[in-house]
Length: 425
Ligand code: GDP
Ligand code: IMO
Ligand code: MG
Image 1 (cartoon, rainbow, N blue to C red):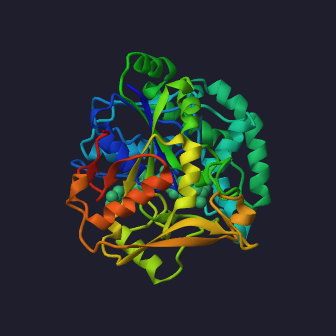
Image 2: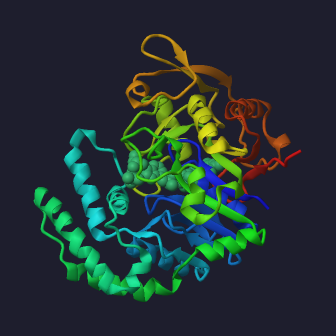
Image 3: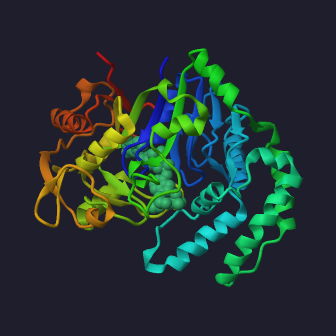
């Protein structure tokens, strides 16, 4: 049984949650390996519609162990809210565990995220303001607090003695009042009381599952183009969505990760700043946004929309190492008479490239398009490859060619069952 990663191929919001919910119907374990509550993974199934920020999308299957892994950052307040929402909808949550080694997103991280964004003015990253940059930078600076430390108030106090003066100094620069240790410590006690039982050493649990050949899924957050190292720096997140990081973030040897499903939206979207070469700032872009209901799952912001970017997909295919892909939101293109697909970028000197250059050049590229005929037929009811219109199949085959990996799933609607499954030959 291969360990399987389900990862974002583009700028995030590809439909990872939807694909994981589908695949988790018979999974033993689903692990989030990076990111925090900046994620917004939408799941629509028989329990209702949910936007999961922290909790893995396998939570709806009571037989699946869901783990928030070591590479993640956890805001206990928003996690508790999310647990309450699920429980109110009748979803059992006793199958959720948290790695004691994951870092805690503190109230001051969220505060600093917002203030730093404000200070960046016109150069803002457009973050989700969930504290992601500040908490991961404290992790790297070794002044972070891990979930497992919530059980040791003295250790937390000692760490706060180092970190709060730094935080308060920065707050003073922004003209904000300081944060007191007591304020944080009362939260720490509350979090430990509410979440303590779920905070465990996840390593033996994951090791045993893999050694027993269980079906283990890794749920990526965001996509390649916002990866800290390989994305459009500085308009990136502060973790690594790349599939290879799943081994680090969850805690298993990389050689087990042999199935990598790239989740590929049939067109492009992004929230936040930074280059999106195929962006359409016109009526077609607005049409894509309305047809695809492209509004941020976490912040509600309208998403920037554009045609499919085959150059970015080739980049993602190499960096993630797709063994297969799941194309999502095909139905959104149902009413477009013509569909464009970018196959190269024209650089400022007039030459063409099929590689993604770094940001200074990427900001100046012009997409080179192929035009494909649409199908003007609803695909929502398709469940087999043969059910899809001929022109839709052709368009998908072109995406498959650019991704260099077979399409195994085509999502034609947001609901769990609205999917075409293409069995391996
Ligand atoms: P994620 O962050 O990658 O999990 O994706 P999001 O949940 O942020 O964004 C995907 C959006 O598209 C959500 O609103 C989903 O309900 C919706 N969605 C997913 N797959 C499909 C599909 O095949 N068709 C349509 N129309 N909507 C879809
Ligand atoms: P999912 O998992 C789309 C974007 C933000 C911003 C940049 C950095 O649902 O695909 P951050 O808050 O992480 O410091 O923001 O990344 N961003 C996302 N965009 N989907 C997400 O998650 C995102 N998480 C962060 O808009 O541009
Ligand atoms: Mg999302």
